[in-house]
Length: 164
Image (tube, rainbow, N blue to C red; front, side, top):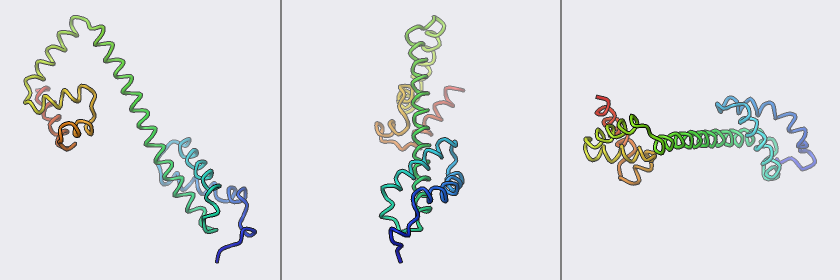
């Protein structure tokens, strides 16, 4: 039996009752910084305002927990991607410095390294070059048609050859 609108607790009362439980549930479900968990909980509460009428009274905590957990996971993935993009930009900046301002020793080292790479079998040579140009395994896979696992194995073999 559904409760009537008059018997539903106010949003403020619901928040007071459920907020601490929701934070504990999200903390248990998602390994993330506190700020991420808090943001996810607040997002879930915001969505609850618009979705509350469609929920069965008494199921709010479950809905909030699912929504906040999913949001926290999404935020974690987004932050990891943003951090990796920032690192790539920093690495690209360092790479550009080397390319545009190499010393004689660096030029010699790069030439020797490229000569070693040219000695690799053609397939490994191509994969090493693509990775050197900044392609990710998934992008290399699209270009070559190889699986990511195959690319990983071939690059591992190439690294072993170059290290030996």
